[in-house]
Length: 419
Image 1 (cartoon, rainbow, N blue to C red):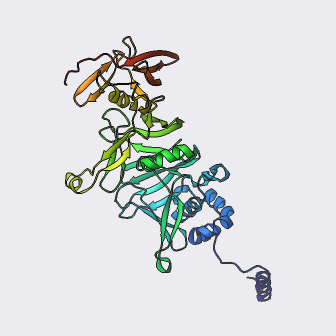
Image 2 (cartoon, one colour):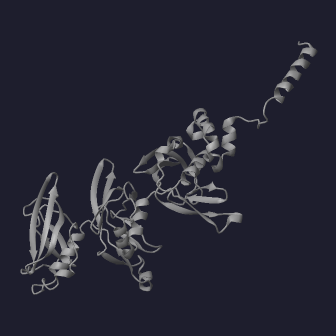
Image 3 (cartoon, rainbow, N blue to C red):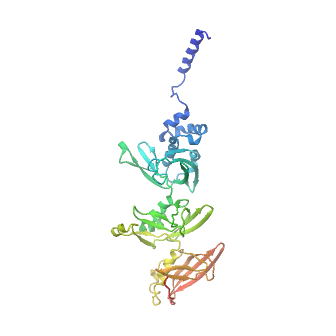
């Protein structure tokens, strides 16, 4: 047993040591970060986060850590260079469980809530974990894996080019702030904004004020092979992006370019190991009138004019030309025809034809290739009135091969049979 005098000296020495130490909360570093992490303190706790990731398994880290980093992300400016940020620190972080609306709610700023409908449906109790993180076409991409019971699935979100409003709570009620969105389908939003205002589209083409569509995700096709673009609460634009009826194809816009007044973009569709590329165009002269999906609403709501998204807008232009009749005076009307150069006509079928309906239920079989072979892409490269007739030049390409053919409209007719 130690001498009482020695025990007393050791105790005094301990008090003396504590007197020279700075006052700090008595807790371990991981616990302190997990319990007190706020968006405004992220930069000061970066070292602590790195230690936290080393000492704990990713699935055991508190959701506050993930939402602290997500808060930092959504507060970045549009088109932020994500290569300047250590985004891999997000990988493996838990988001906790969805609420009854299928959301995760967090606060990028004090008293401003970001309601994130991450699940895509209203259901509570799904655990979300950030499974993969990467940068594609200047989008930050987050893949979130959801699990509940024996079920699991993943959703991909993109950050960087679209924004949303978040709303103040309590004393800040009625105020808003703009932050980056965590968006599963930014491409759909871009296209909705483009097609919803035909007048503004022409001006945006002139000024070059169009969004950068490259890399933007469009979601998955439905059972009809479509991606429906919501124009309003009761009105959609049914876009046949796949070209046939099949659900579950993931669609991403790969590239875009402008050709005169045409906005052209290519979409990659994938399902399992299958892959398809399709090219679409938007032109200010091709407009549709859309009505609400519900017939009751359509009787009370005026049609909404929207631009058409098509992979063969050229056939619509040719339809208007061939319906003018054999006695039409082409020379007199020469200056009134739009420029068709760059418009796509689609792909030839096994007969080398491009088939279209200038009149509903009446098919025009156009032997545009001149021989039987499918898969040739046809584009109008020349158009205009010459010597009392309308001339069309078409370039057909497949692989590394191309064919150019010229056609005339004016003096000859054909009979179409009803389908």
